[in-house]
Image 1 (cartoon, rainbow, N blue to C red):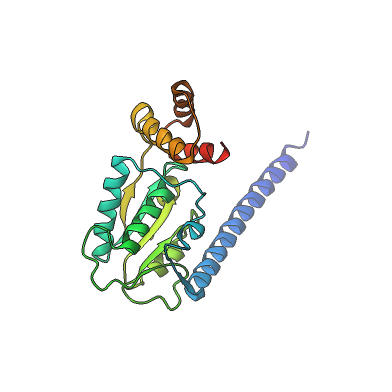
Image 2: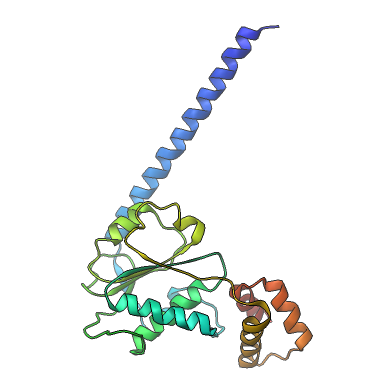
Length: 231
């Protein structure tokens, strides 16, 4: 009955949606700036073999590594030993944190690939007071362009962890070597990993149970870690 009024209402609703979208964008930009400022001013924490598992929020189950993950670890260690910055990407629960744990452990024990003469340790949390040349580790799925921009100014190697889809959205990612962690082979590697975990924890199992768990994992190492913890 009132086409002119309906047209005005439709136009007003579109303008409101546009303003709401812009407000959300501005709020996101503000949060990114705040995170960058916090990241710069936050004191750094040195990682040691004693606090490593706690810092990375790993459970009590000791990780078991496939040959493919070990090869990736050595490749990343060589990049870091050259002072490069590396992004460890992949979907959730494929083993990114497990791989990060192995790399840092190798560096701290002196068994990492590459030349590490004069290394100044491994640090996490923030960049304040971090020694030049030290490895900085960012264990967090929350990465922003502001954080990467600040991190690019760190005079030393860095290793960050992120989900693949989040990493592709970042504009400041050009200076990083990207290493993707894929899902493991169902039948072969994951079955061996699960058996090793169960034996190490003293948990009895059947081959039928292992096969069922591996199929349910859909190639995700993190699923097996959670399963063993609950057993």
